[in-house]
Image (cartoon, rainbow, N blue to C red):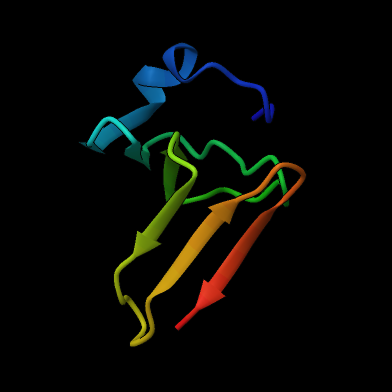
Length: 76
């Protein structure tokens, strides 16, 4: 999967799980690969807002913040 892919081109390969306007989550139905590591992924999340907080899934929540030149991860 290309890092610049258009989500609409892959709608038949993904199942939309959530769309709040600022974030959207999808399940990978067709072994699409991650543009970072080239391995198949389970879920895809698209974030349009500057920052987002993820609830606990392994006992510790985390937040992502997009800055001008990078993105940072905060573990709580």
